[in-house]
Length: 315
Image 1: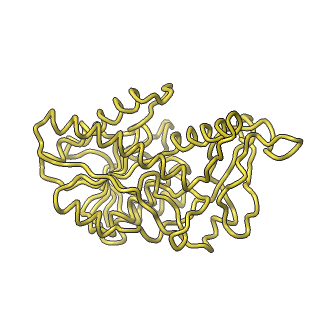
Image 2: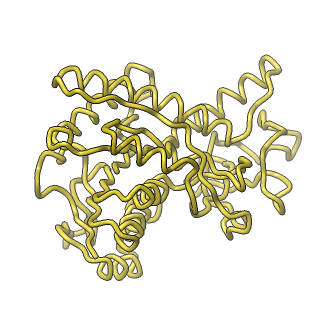
Image 3: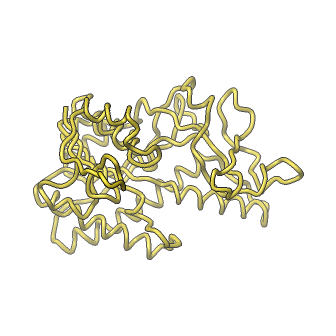
């Protein structure tokens, strides 16, 4: 199981044009060749944060300018799963042809179950979409806000929080824990048959008993759950640094080659890993190893050909 980081699709300073994203994806897929040449069966998860934000903006503009109904977040999640999967399939096909590798890529739009009573729904914290000068709906400003947000019970309207860097107000949604993946047995079967499978894009479309909800699932946690569910041996989390560090960007910075689950939990408790950055990746690694995985490797894509790449989290 491989979880693509955000830089696999969009890099700093880029606008996110189709050619930019396709080039980035193809470069990342090229880095998977060493694994394919070893005969690995691959399942790929990916993020979709910037793409969902852009999608919300497009929906907002369409509603404001043309009266087109804006769609809820679960719909936007499905849109980006399909479009990003298309990019990955296209990039991977080019790489497979270049290296004369006889593999095929298949993508699944994936729904991921969460609990209706997950505490995250009472305290939404995940920022999504554009910044507003003031909260939509207040002082006569609707900000182009859609009126059909698909929210959970107990949350009668969208929540907004002020950006700590002073860029304005931004919508926040819940980030519940994934508890199950729809049709995950098919993912495992296809992978064992040799297909490269793209699934749980953006953490999956969050659903409660099949019904879409207003939320965002962490893509690394969803990928870890998928990896455990299909019996994957290894779980790679691709990011923009070659290893996990303690005392990151300090004078006593230290790269870690191997971490036991206990050590990783201790460093998390000490606050060594930043929330919204390395901490969720380390939690996903722990989840995978604790539930039967052999090891999780956190590294950057360009290191995959190196047998000693990244930081290995082991039991």
